[in-house]
Image 1 (cartoon, rainbow, N blue to C red):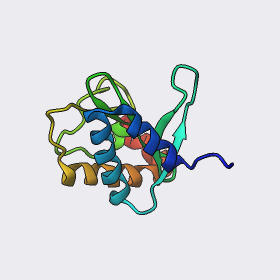
Image 2: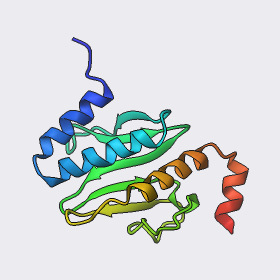
Image 3: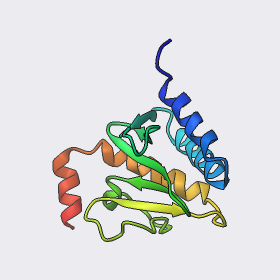
Length: 139
């Protein structure tokens, strides 16, 4: 029997959460996939302490990573510091030179329009030449 696809593995992870975090991760996942048809789902970083791995969405590199935490679902954007965030969705990892994250808690409402724009900009940033991205980071 072949290994399950990344999508099937993420489905299983969501089912395994059995609480609001599963519903939120599913909601965020759907939004991410709708933001750009070229985004690819992956599962990375499987280890004994997390055998199901971590959901990852990529397009010319990692766009964002979805992680259920104890009290939130975190979307981590590896190049978030380069990403336009006019609605100030980023609320975690703000001290990093490159990474930014959004912790979505149970009572939070997802601003679908703003998050879609953020994801689309993260895709754009992934497509920038390294020299352009480095120059933007120095500003």
